Length: 306
Image 1 (cartoon, rainbow, N blue to C red):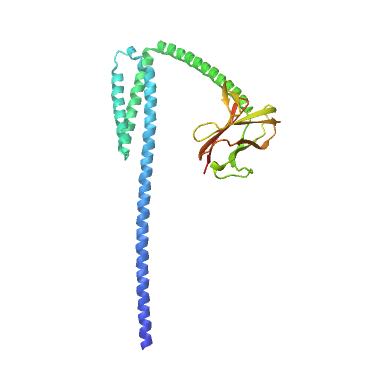
Image 2: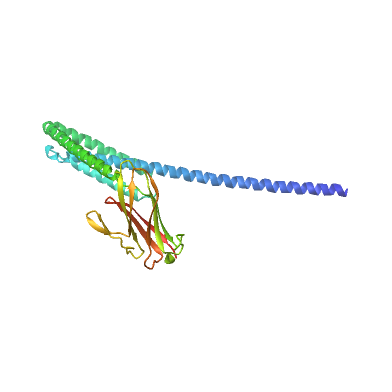
């Protein structure tokens, strides 16, 4: 009997636990479903707002196009005996601008206000259509002359634009051809060295500064002897070293060091230029510049630490 009672109690306990788990699962399902429904509802609202914003933008663009078209005929209002259409257009235009301002200031777009804006712009279209029809019927000859003059003006403008574009294209092509001749530089580095030539992490103890770089292949660059001028500027803005001067853009520029290479159009890897330290170096940003053939080949900053 005792064993049966224990089994009965164990069974009851299991049923209770199972019931609790089932209730928990149902509550979790309800919570998850509500959460998902809220997210879906928020997404639908956001999507609706986006659609309304896009409609507003399209209507705004359409309004600007109407104004541009109306401006083409506005100076012919003297042909009309009654300029009431101009007044009607101005009134409708004022309503559209007010609606646009209100819609731009509202965080939540209203489909009803968008529809109102569509109706007002439709009114503008109708007024413009009647306005143009009256002007055309009263001043066909003037319209024809105006159109002809406008076409001539457009052709002249197109011709001027074409000439200007061709001139720019020729100048750009000439500039690209000149720039194509410039030596390229890759892999630029600035390394402090010890007295034995090994790397020195502390710039204040450096005995030499080594600038290393590669000149890639460039078939457009004239071959021959090239003098590469190096400028190293310390964090205080002062030029290190004094290896003379070179010409650049009509002036005379001082350099830190120089190196002569023979360029045959092929890649020259691992070019190194050294400068013997003869002053106290401080931690900070150092600027390295390379020049050749009256071009600044590269300019880059390197941070050297203590």
